[in-house]
Image 1 (cartoon, rainbow, N blue to C red):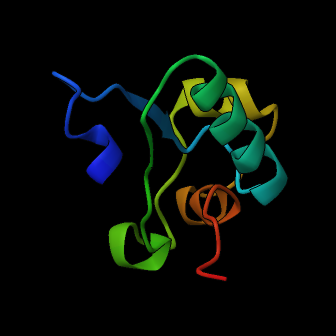
Image 2 (cartoon, one colour):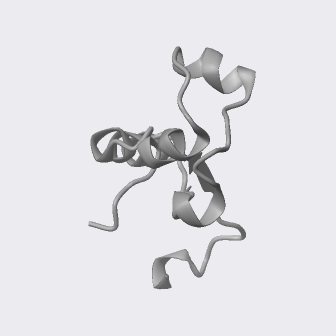
Length: 84
């Protein structure tokens, strides 16, 4: 953080879950954020089984976006990057 002391603000790129569970895509997002002038990139992390029940269904927009119908838990597990 020493190099950031002279900046008046930090630019934070929001990646969210746009990596779709892919480490390769996450790394591309990091590169693009850096190329765009971002100082930091933020990814969302979560443990699906702690946030949603097995029986929760997807919203219609989620089914449309994924092109398939699965449960919320399965969908979120596919969007999660592992700790490794």
